[in-house]
Image (cartoon, rainbow, N blue to C red; front, top):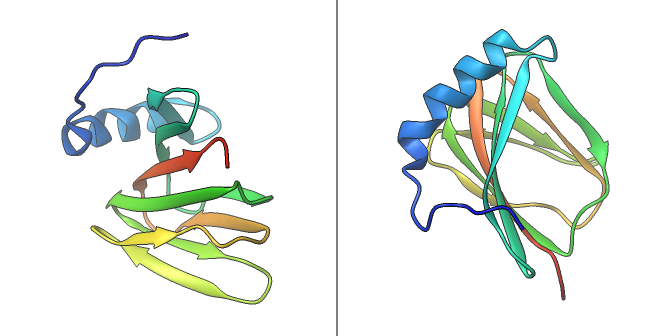
Length: 112
């Protein structure tokens, strides 16, 4: 198992992850901050216009916008989330689009 620090300054790390995204051809970057048997927390940077295509929902998950603006969407609904917004990931297929350069913290439950 990969070692992760006990405490991460997410707001300080976000600009570095965004800088990595600017250097990557996929225009995105991610770093897992917490990883265990029950949960995972990942900081994800997406440059404006980039998407995480529609995918199945985990058992439980939240999305916290560290910086920027994103659109979380299902086939039926959409939510625009900005700095400081926290949202529960919907239980159906969903996707994410960066409306501006953005860094989000995704926390996922791995077991029920």
